[in-house]
Image (cartoon, rainbow, N blue to C red):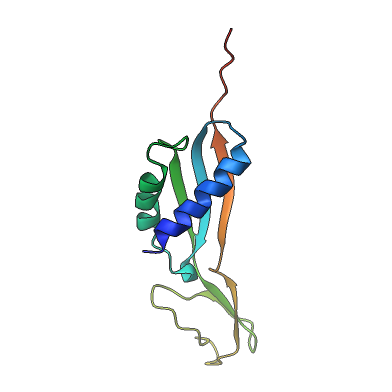
Length: 117
């Protein structure tokens, strides 16, 4: 379950980026070809952040479909649940992956810092 170590890395990045401000939600883009199970990632986030400053924050995962472009005929298509990297238009195998390899923290939703005094 490599999602656990991925969550640890995300937590380090988020803590550094938040600079001490409370974090509500972490938005991620995860490509279909990354071999990461979003549900497992969300579960592991709860384990990694328990009893830390990120406890209670939410990991929101936006799954990005894998898309290929045929270099021979120009057809663009999603590869689907069972990736087939040949072109369905011309049968060619010279395709370029144009999306689906993303792994990116896109935004952080931060809570308002309360002033005391």
